[in-house]
Amino acid sequence: MAGETAKLNAFPVFMRVDGRRVVIIGGGEEALAKARLMAQSAAEILVVAEAPEPALVNWGAANGVTLVRAPYEAAHLDGAALAFAATGEERSDRAVVADARARAIPANAVDRPELCDFFTPALVNRAPVAVAIGTEGAGPVLAQMIRARIDRMLSPSLGRLAVLAASYRDAVERRLAKGVVRRRFWKAFFTGGPARAIEAGNARRAAEAAEALLLAQGAEPGHVALVGAGPGAEDLLTLRAQRLLMEADVIVHDALVPEAVVAMGRRDAERIAAGKRKGCHSKTQAEINELLVALGRAGKRVVRLKSGDPLVFGRAGEEMAALRDAGISYEVVPGVTAAFAAAADFELPLTLRGVASSMVFTTGHDLKGVALPDWAKLAIEGATVAVYMGRSTAAEVAGRLREAGLSRDTAVAVVENASLGKRRLFHGTLSDLPALEKRTDLAGPVLTIIGDAVAGANFTRSESLAAWHETGARIPAQEE
Ligand code: SAH
Image 1 (cartoon, rainbow, N blue to C red):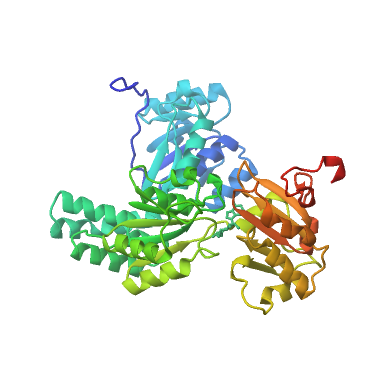
Image 2: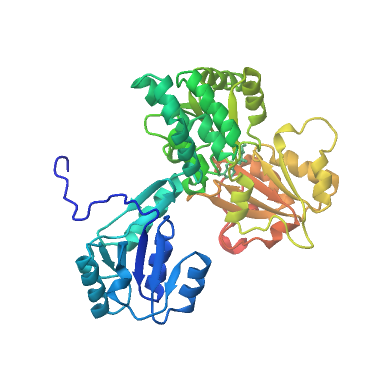
């Protein structure tokens, strides 16, 4: 509710602990947990325990912890910045807290919030950047859940980027006017060229990009990411794809990418549907190439979102060539391709020991001329064949494989809308495949897998391909 923020009983602060000592009293699991947490800082850690558990002893020895094997005495706390009571016994914990307070040392008693002067956070550590999550001891599990979410959102290299940023602070103050220009510089620094170079592990290129950004007064050149959106399920997006979507100025997406995935992008990002579905007003590939180049030239951060993996039947080659020719920087983010999603839905091993040890990604769409396609030969030799865009050319594909000598009994699996709730699975043999072309009940994208490895799939959730007749009526189950 606006204007009615509840008050925190525990206020988060970042405390300097480098070169200072933190004392943990206790020798069990809780003490070890606190030691691990504090070891994420540069504090000197002292553990006091009469009979420490081996796990604590070993971990402590490997991590520079000073272990005092002695009964606890108040003097152990002298000079500490923080004190932890982790004895596991309430009376002892109380005594430690009382001794700490007498020395004006803030104390934390593990699992006894009522005794705590401070709480430890769930921590996302990208030193020097830290995100600390606190619930005032009310919900450690909740805190861990939030921690995991934030952890996924932040690039693993964020800390290194922050260190680089610190080294540019003076230069920015000297060379860029306060206000808009400086803000623009830092935004471009943290999401643009320097960030990408650091993420790629190239410190030299990051420094060059930062230098160029200074010269350009923070005006960042455009960048296009060709991003695989996966087969459709939102949670099959990669973390990197998600991060880029959240940073994008413009998202250019294909019709096959579901709205729910596009919606994971930054809310105020411009969205452009590039079409490519029957019946839609769609752009030609040349128009898409031009659009990407124009957006890049305008300094936009563009996500070109393609279904599955961008490099599998995604025409990414043409887009990359156009960007390269125009001198616009780009990157490629892989995605889960439809064949893998379909195989997963069918629990179908694409390679199977002694049966299939190679795999073909193909499409029926460029079957022209009289020569047999090369992949037909591979299928004879036992390759598993994944056919993209295969519905409208099912008869042609089946014909070519039969011509090449593949048995009409070879197993075939067909998945419509792989990975999505509305998916449909079908199984049959090569002789059933031609009929797929005539099916009017399959409106979604369809992927076909052909080969002996298909026999290893799970057919308990799939319908028989042979059971469908042109009338659209299905033969009752007992006849399947
Ligand atoms: N780059 C994409 C392929 C684009 S071509 C990828 O790597 O998956 C479009 C074809 O992909 C469709 O005709 C269909 O054969 C396949 N496809 C894409 N998504 C699919 C899905 N969810 N289920 C089944 N097939 C799919």
